[in-house]
Image (cartoon, rainbow, N blue to C red; front, side, top):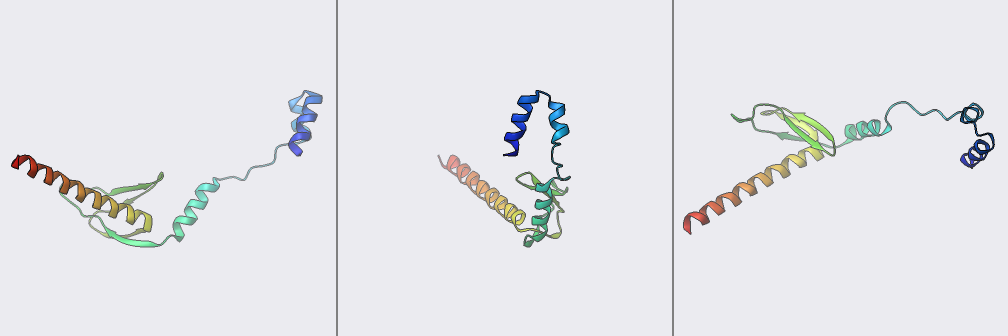
Length: 113
């Protein structure tokens, strides 16, 4: 309703500055509400302990990311992380082992053919 009155008044006056002087825009709260909500949600999530092994090739921290939100996990140490990140790591490991198994099976088939 308020928007309709503004449009009618602006159409009558034709002056945008006058319109804002009569009805200034409502102030917007500072800060990003989505970020604040995400931080609160992350703080209340269930935690799980994971260990990411350190290898000769990979000595740097591991970056895990879900929907644009990411964390770094130290290799070679048991660390508590939010449950979704632990699940991501477990799924990643399962997929890597399946891929390795598939590759070995195909190599064996090629050798026997």
